Length: 334
Image 1 (tube, rainbow, N blue to C red):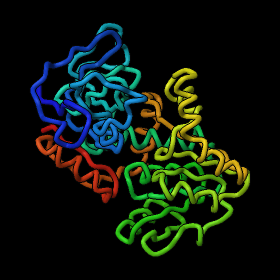
Image 2: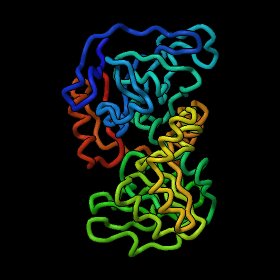
Image 3: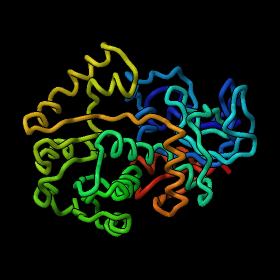
Image 4: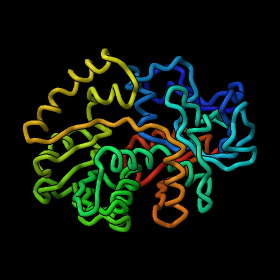
């Protein structure tokens, strides 16, 4: 089968479309004929070797973290799915494998596709929507009436985050370029700040929490818009000790490394009586079932920027790397 293979860590030249053996499902696993696969910033970080402390993959390895497709075969002990089921999934972090004609997925990580979506739209959901749901519902515990700041709302995670925060009853502020303003307003943002002309700290204050999608200078300035006792969850900043223990299931060694790496960030927020948490989302078929129900009920829109043919996988990753995508970038396998 054809697959996008990471041969060595580095730039785009380290990946290649190659012929590799088709995998077989083991106990509790599905063999999925992949129809589409979503691209995410984590794919770029993985290719560059930026996640080696967390997942030091044995190379070469088939890349890709989320997919949609049809169950081709099932392994022993599979009870939730049958051959022919249309499914979508965020695949196991330790194995990847979504950028291929066939992929193996654990049954507890998969869910039936929303009936209202085609394959490319379904492939755009798992990683980004799970990240947004788990950050806002499980970590920030957003409740009705709270004010939530989500910088970078026009991106893949941001488009889901705005909608989920609104479903949880929050007032939502975000940042966007003039090109993305209409999109984030349509998704429900109450306040939109044009980051090309304005600084968000000049417009916002007294917010309850923030979901940081950008890191860097944006994360460093977030304290100024939050009230004391507020909370920040980031997917673009620096991992901290809870990340190692709760999200990655790792021990004291990695937790200590993250403690040192995140010290400046944690102290910055602590000085202003704010908490800081870095989140690595976890795959969950149960959460995907819930997201599918929201999509089929018309409560959650999937925003696609571009769909590339699988033969142009490297071009798709280059486009994602520009940072200009509004919504998700997807590969269509056929």
